[in-house]
Length: 511
Image (cartoon, rainbow, N blue to C red; front, side, top):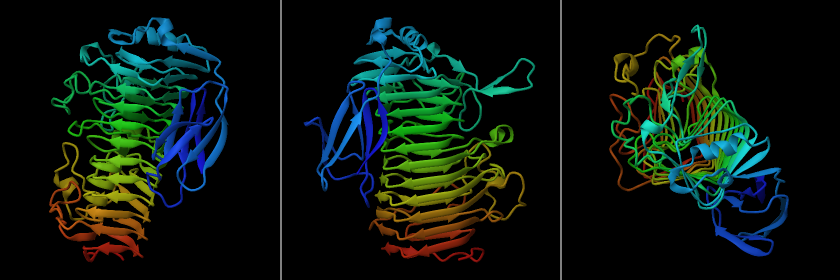
């Protein structure tokens, strides 16, 4: 079955749906108007380079009966070529002004076209109702010289300091950041698509020397969206970002389809895609190979929750490939506004440190509620730990304090987080190096209602002596299959564990 994810004037994004498959499908051939066009086995097909307002006959051969579909590209009212605005595309001359002239002179419903070439810019600002189309071989590269980059005020106060506007954030707080390669603020109805590349020049800019240290401002991303709505990003490659690759903040109705996101494996905090305080987000058919978390769902630290309470919610992650990375799909740890209604399905995790990870700590606040998380029909291969939930995560300067790490119960108050209603089903995990399920709640705020059902956990012969997550007084798990502490309502049904021991629940747990 072919599911049409999006249609543009210059192509389509299609999802191949097969019952029971994970990220990959059987090898297939895509035929366009009778001519073989692509071969592969990715579950999302990004087909660009087509002509606007044209009917195409598409066929997919290779698994089961051929799938045929007739589609028509959208009309294009204005096709604006940046080279007509004096963009050089030689990778040497600065093309920022030329491209901005093209974008900001464009009428509504225009498509700004980047032909093959390398376009050196400081940063580009999006405009509502104007799309960006990157043709094959088009590279947008950020100037690696930080002295040339603009700085975004994280918290821009008004004239009499009675109100403030958030322009950027760093690690969950409104802090000054260098402007991203592509930046959108208060924009809507924008599509960024094609087969081009966003290159953040992270390797060239000395960004990773003392990476946590603020040097006038914090590191830029490849794409930042702040207070945006109805944004689609598809087909592109994001690489070499100085920090997180893609960072939507306070945004809604977002679609990320068929992206390839790469970072150097040793680069710090170069997460793939981190939606923060966003709602209605769909991430489908993306391939991650990064130096930190592949996808990290966030909602800010306590400062943000007390002033701008907005949870992350209604997030779907489907048919994605998480390769390497600290975590495949991560929730936290900056989630003071809460995270709810997350669905992860038909994904593949390969050699990630953790497959699914939820991390929080005392001090995130009683608005830090993680609720209704469902992981269904995913495959994991050679991961260290499959599913980890840790409420003693030792982040931030006070992360090792007795307040955060004390294993005795403290009074429940305004700074106490909560995790509840998690379902894991249909997981197939092979060659696990550590643990299958690790749940460690707070004694005063246990994890509530976790269900693990119809899963198969097969362990590697050589296991690691490694705590599944970052906490003081760590729990080693060389042979543990399942470990729970401070969990109320844990159902473990119809699962297979091969070459593992089951750790009995502690007295304060409720089976």
